[in-house]
Length: 582
Picture (cartoon, rainbow, N blue to C red):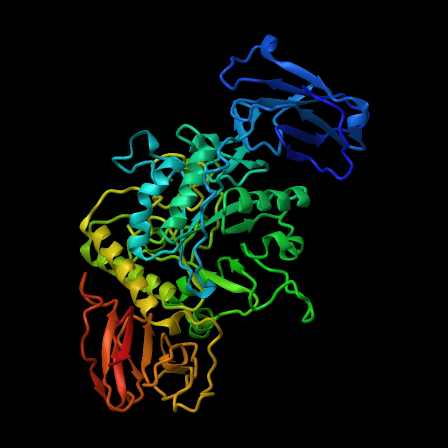
């Protein structure tokens, strides 16, 4: 079953050599090293059915041991490592079943797969938990809560307008405490989580990626890299997911992320890399270029957006900054809610977290959620409070989808997802953490609003410009690319006590059209209507209201003529207005 082999240059991992498989693993020179092998995955776990292959001295070098398995039956071969008589699964295993490492026989599923081509500035991300997204979805049968259910959800995701699906950790992990998210210290980075498979998680995940790509959607996966993780293992794992599963990008978090190495890895050059923070290189460093697919995904937009939404003082300049923040070398992913912290609905329903269920005495989870409740803590039947909350949700969504950068929406926030005030639902592998698909009048209105808002964004390229917008008119059109206005025309004082501002976009800088068009986004987070200066429309055109978050449910995108008096337009309290020239 085995033979001597040259292991010079090998690292821990699995290597195919014709019909044979080479399994290399770590084992200190003074420790015994062996492989426990079974030829049939269906065998019961008895010692008599297991072959123990001891690694001969010539197959060892330093801390590396290697075994060649001759004529490996890839559809049935399973094995475990035995180092100093301690049994463990292979950290490079392609699949894990009941503690045994398995090989995969699903290599041809993606043979004809083609990755969609979506410009970085045009990517709109929908983030899902691979189990919780479909666990409560009716009509999926035994597929519910597994990779096999994802293809059935593509029409819903694409119908909303998203073109990227970002999945929370999908690899196997171990944890003594309940852990639903996968942010753990013991990870098996090469193997999909067995519980997320209906029958074969490897095949089902690859089929899901192929289905996403066929529908024109990219697929990202999230990886939590704890401190102390071998950086070479991380790089090899990401390369594996990129090549074997055709993952298009990776969201990387944790204290063990080898950012500098990943930025310079040629094999991942065309994969999107989403960091919490990117170590900025020296100006002459070629690790980052304008063409780099490097992004940040952190709470900066959330903190500014929710603070302004709440009506905090001095937030105009911060809002303007995050709404227009771009990046040549490092692109920006924006969100108003993510995994940690309140859901979008809970952010306007609770001032204080409700984490008692976690069993940590309420000390876990952040204490700063930048949240509000409309005057009542928690759910209420008061219609005025609920109307206020729903308008604030629409405002938050408008901040997100009308900003430069790449918007990210946590799955279910378009439907009124709630965790009942739990802002750290890491252990909630239950209906608290699963997405409810119950349909209500309010949830239907909100889904439609998100769909129409994304469509509006896509119809106006100036809202997702490939390069930063500046307060200049380089083409001499008579209007700068972007301008800030308050009661003054063409500039804003950014008064700390003000709650309203207008951002004027010259759409000619984002299209090839010769005729001039303006797009004017007006924000008011105050409790009273406010007036903002408005310039004259281009010759032969007139202003119209295209988006109004203060409108009745379902009427937010009905066009109307704005009331303009003395060069000022009135913006309702707690609202976002978008004016266009027609």
